[in-house]
Every structure is written in C-alpha cells, then in structure tokens.
Amino acid sequence: MRITGYRTLTTAHEWGRPVGDANGVYADGVMPVPIIMVDTDEGITGVGLGPHVEAEAIFAAIDGQDPRGVTALYDRMLRQTFKAGHAGVVFGTVGAFDTALWDIKAQAAGEPLWRLLGGRDRRVHAYASGLDIGLSDDELVATYEVYAQWGLTAAKLKGGLDVERDRQRLTLVREVLTRAARGTRPGLMLDANESWTRKQAVRHVSELERTLDLTWIEEPVRRWDADGLAAVSRGVHTSVASGENLTGLEQFRPLIAAGGLDVVQTAAVWGVTHFLRVSALAHAHDLPVSPIGNTPVALLHAATSVPNHIASELQDLRPPAGVTVDLHVEDGAFVLGDSPGLGVRVDEDAITSAYQRTAPPAPDGPHVRPERAGRRLLAVTNRGATHRAHPVDVR
Image 1 (cartoon, one colour):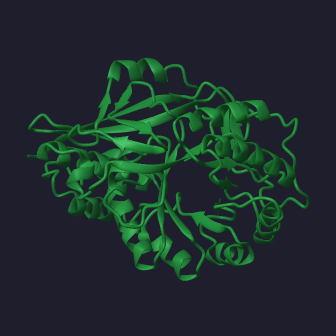
Image 2: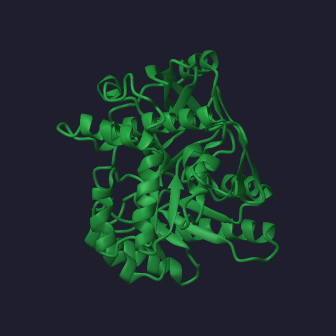
Image 3: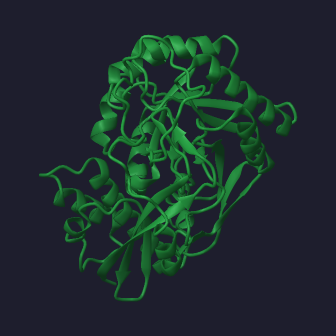
C-alpha cells in the first residue's frame, strides 16, 4: 500500500448559541473546522481533523510511503519541518496527517482504531464542556441540563474574569449535576484560558475554594510558564491542568519537571502519536492525561489504550457539518463503534455548502489575546459586556 495524495477541506461546527472564553465570544456559534484526507493506491482514504498550514511541504515527507508505518512517518514529518520549526499550527498539520494515517492503518486491518491500539473497553469517560462564558444564567442551566440527560456528572466552565460570577455559575451547574447524579458529588472544573498572573490565579482559585470543591483549574497562567504553573499548584488545593496548546514532548518536559502539571492535557488536533507519547511521559511521572477538543474522536480511540486516562472533553453533542462519527454518548461516556479506522465519514458536498456560510477571522476578534490579559489591577466583570461576533480559538 502506498500514499498517493491528499485533499484539504474546511467545514463548520454550528453550535446554535454563543461560544467562547475569557478572551472573547463567537456570537453566532459557527466555527471553522479544517480537515485533511489522505488517499492510497488501494482505495482507502484516511481522515484527520486539524490544520493544513504548510500541508504541501509536510506531505512531501510521506508521499509514496506505506501509510502503515505511522510512527516512523510521524518522525519523518517532524524532520521535514525542523528548520523552520514544527510548533503551533504546523504541528497541527503534522497531527492531522498522523491521524489520517492511523485511520488508514486501522481500516486496512479491518479493525476500529481503539482495538488496533490495544484498547479493551470501548467506553471513554467524559466531562461536559460548554464553552459557555457568553451564556446567561438561564441559558447556562439549560445547557448543562442537556449534558446531564446524557449521564455526565462532571463539567468544565469557562471563566476567570470575575470571581463572584464564576462562583455563581459553578454553583448553578453543581446543582444541575447533583440532581442528575442523585446526590453524588459532581466534578467541577474552571478554565481561565491563560488570563491571569500567578498571584491572580492563586487569589481567584483560593476564593472559590472557600465554597466550592474544584477538580482542576485549567490554564491559569501562560502555557509555557513552568514556574508559574508550579506556583499555582502549590498555592491552591485544586489540581492544575494544562498542556492542550503544547506541541512536542520538549515543551512538556520543563512543566512536568517543575511540578507545574497535575493533569496533563493534549489537544486532538495534535494527533494520535503525540498523545500516545505524552501519555507515556505523564505515566512515568504518575500523572493522568485528558484529551481536549470539540471532536476528539482520534484521541478517544487512543485513550482506551493508555493506563492513565482520566476523562475526555465532550463539547457539543453534534459533529461538524458534513461529518459523521461512529460513536455515541451513554451514561456519561463516549462509546466507540466497530467501524474500521476512526469511524469518521465525510460528505464533501455538505461541507462545501456549510463553510460558505462562515465568516473569515477578523484581525481584532476575540481569537486574539486581549491586550490587558494578566495586567488587570482588579477583578474584571463580564456583566453587561459586549462581545464581538468573531471566532475564538476554543480547543
């Protein structure tokens, strides 16, 4: 079997409500989702959800190769881009190709990827994540009541701008999940999306801990601030989770060495091989791992095969437009199907129609880090705030 070519597409995920975080809100809830499809001479096509920046240059490393040699091809792609650097979205393109190759490998074997990777249980524990900072209290409750109907008893809220507002919103969601769990204590997480300094993080979380039992605080300071993450971890009872925006083991090593990570995260767009390697590194330090992403199907398959998976992010219950996935949600878990490969199918005509309705990112939109993030003297309230209707990166 040989790789013969690739195609790139961009579809959209339509939430039907505002989505966003402390950096801003995408008011119409329509977000672009890039896709890479890799073709072979045996008619098997693999699908990877992720960027396609520098795709032509990266594809040169795998063109004509046997796609079943996935891990060797992954390193080959990294070597292809090492001079210019393979971090950020370029790393995401490598990850999208990597995911597509794993899809091909499992399809060729006639097995779902979770079984090919050595997983025994197709169920992957999930937590709800509504990208919800733009919702009113009533909308927030209604959103998490839907998650609760699917058996989810843990939830991650977006916050970080106002401690009392965060307390109120977390309390509302706790009540929803407690009712659904028949009195069982729910898991509560807060994602600040790198919006604080170290001291702000410790003060904010410590204040919340007076009345709430938090499972983790996510990205309290900048993603690369190993000493800062460690200072927050020492300063609060809550676990510190981060890593979704780190690209490569070399970026995880200083954070783990400093004691800055209690929960190690990786984003679905960075690929399967990256997740497996990060999971092994985390396991060597007795740390749990947690996949992040709107449609993290590839990492759900991979999560079944690692011993330290704790829970995976469940954002919307619907896949992007034109994409179908062989999985469902039941009793608080993703349940993977038996389709060979990832179980992802793409309707290219539907995708073309969907993406025509999305607007291009604006240079000053909320996907851009606010100028005063981490430099606010007092707590900032988002009551009555005006959010611009542009995309925001909410991996």
